[in-house]
Length: 172
Image 1 (spheres, rainbow, N blue to C red):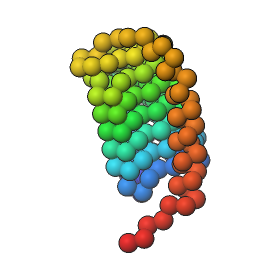
Image 2: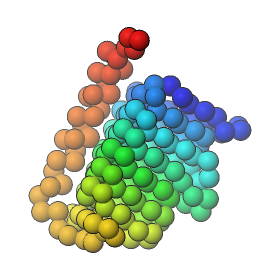
Image 3: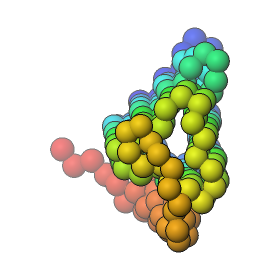
Image 4: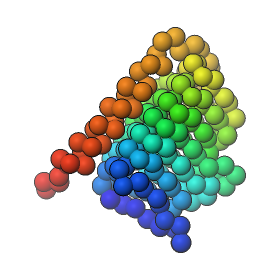
């Protein structure tokens, strides 16, 4: 896998995390126990650092970056969908950020909230617990019962990470 130090700063990846061989991890990045980082994801911690909690999934093609004034922090048991861009924001525990969405500087996705697919959460927006952010720019709406599936999905990716660690092999 492509894991790079940036000067003296090396990524810190828990031994029970799983990073796909074609993901890229650079610099000040910490990945917690049970978390998974899937193909073509890029976590580039060159300015303010990136922190990924426990049992969180960073799915295929996602880009996580930071800004000099604020790290990018993703909590425990989160699902970060395919082709997501996170930059200088906070995603609290048990939140879901849907495929193709963008969450920008100083935005906060609160515990148990959802960012819908292809939404753009602008600078400094807060998505409260139990709410969904939908559209461009994102507007808030009640999640009404959809929150329960986040932990199930997060747990599914923890199990997939174990399976891939054991069974994935390149054959070309």
